[in-house]
Image (cartoon, rainbow, N blue to C red; front, side):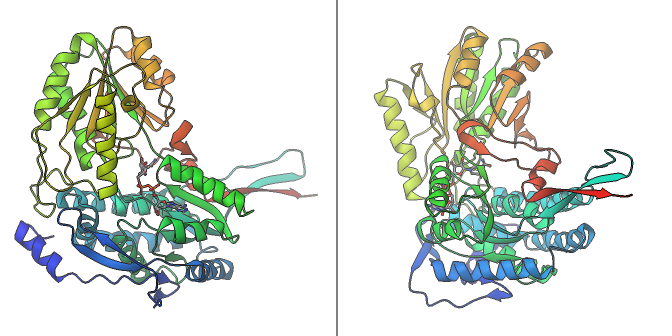
Length: 497
Ligand code: NAD
């Protein structure tokens, strides 16, 4: 792993990106007619130019995936055989962490230290999910003398995986590894904002022994490549991670095409942190709140973007978070000391600015931690004094913007926390265990964390399932529930007379 800024810059100057789609046994040539480029958000340079794969190329990928699935290679292997290959893939991902991290940093601006951490975490995710597959059991029972009933767990077929740009390596792996563990074949369409690491992951999978055709990667935009994949009748299930709006469009597209099919939808969020009056350790809490919203420049689905704090603690906590925000300063993403990168795209930058200007129009007080006109950087910003129905408290911003609401009665805090319609993650801080239990039940979210925060000391347990609710989507991620998204339980009844 390179150590210094200069090392990373040299690696960036030397790196060669193969932009061709990965179908079947490796990269394939395309006619290059529809092309798009990824842009480094730090300096505006072109990182790579890819084909916007059309229906024909997508069809070819689905055909390879289907043929491989039906051949029984992989789909009829034992869990142990599949785990052995997936573990080798994990090793290769870890060995190539520098290149994968660099590709993500170049294409979406994530600080290199964070990107490297993300790759390491993702390699572990492959191992943990493969090992979970090994301990999957299915029920069997005798319903009457002379009978034996059991559940056979079977893979589904071709899974279409469509992923976002905010943690390119991790979001691709979270979407596809459970499908692979269960024996499916996959056609992946990574985000058009950050594509290179997904292609490199497929190269590494092939090197690790994944049979040709099990994992295919088509490059392209949502409107062309993604839509073609959704419409393909041979796809057995769609596994999507992205915004709530795109999730709804994908559901409509599949229905319009007459191919309604099962889907996993991991969508947007507006994740509240409720700070109860009993939680008086403001000095310890402030760094957690700051990290939860400013990490990855707020471009995190579970970012703690709404702070709902008891009025007695509010001034002190807001002041402390604001002070910490000043430390998240713009830096070159390839400098290992940088903790705060630019917003990934110009479009996303404009959206964040539009949310801030709307908040001002609604009468809120917008406090950036510092002034910056630096490229696509948005300073860590607190928005205080918000009206009860303010959009800033309900809409996903996907930037380093923390909306602050103060409350007197806990019931008001719960009502506001549940009012956005999203239901991804909710967090509460309390010294009262009973209050913690009541909040865990009252908060509408796929995961509720009490006195811990996802990604900031409180990691997701990848052996337990979590399922978003409301506008954050449906279908479980992680654990056995996550694996079962990509399999069906067939009931077999034997008469043993
Ligand atoms: P996005 O919805 O714009 O794009 C996601 C993917 O969908 C991309 O690959 C895109 O090309 C594709 N797409 C777009 N239109 C399509 C169409 N018509 N048909 C098929 N595919 C289409 O999201 P984004 O900007 O890449 O990512 C940010 C969003 O992702 C945020 O809302 C964030 O909360 C969400 N997210 C959710 C989770 C989670 O686990 N719930 C994790 C990460 C990100």
